[in-house]
Image 1 (tube, rainbow, N blue to C red):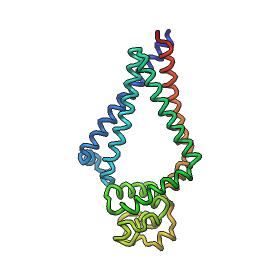
Image 2 (image 1 turned 180 degrees about the horizontal axis):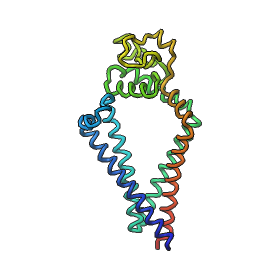
Image 3 (image 1 turned 45 degrees about the horizontal axis):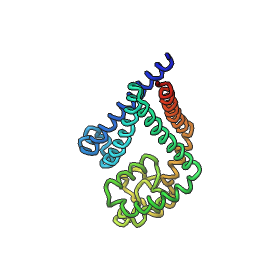
Image 4 (image 1 turned 120 degrees about the vertical axis):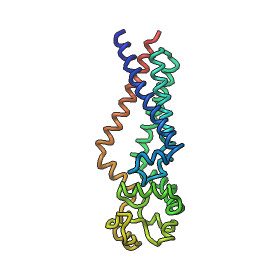
Length: 241
């Protein structure tokens, strides 16, 4: 009976924390989506990536809603000893866990297939929108600057894009000795070909493999917490009268 009381208390506290995190994410997501400019004024140093925060707002709302629902079901189910809420909590967490495992398997086994699929989606978007859509261009500039990469595959992704048609030059990130976006010398096709800066997909995979221990540790930690939460919910469920 003491073990049941301890597990129940820990489950209430754990899910209360998840619930509060969900509320916070929802609040921030709604704020960013409704009043992005005010958010950006407060976080002045991040203003260079401006409008991409609007897209992040929708992601925060979705993540907050999931955490809100999970925290509420887990906390209410344990506190009120409601079997229905506990079972819903278990199944939602199980679906998330299965989705994460499936995504990990696909990423490990079907990396080439995923790259080909993403190439069919991303490259045409770059050729169509880079240089004409401000938000799209800013997101790519931030990505290339952060990962020190060029395009999805390489500099050829930007050929025929609005930016290339207008300036006849590639983004400065495509020339390894010209990574500063304020550089005077344009990144020509010859320079980009000689420098051969890696594409962002390849660079991202390289960074993940370089930090495999950290990435694996974080993934294992999250998976362990999810498994512990599912076991705790089933323990409380099975010990209810």
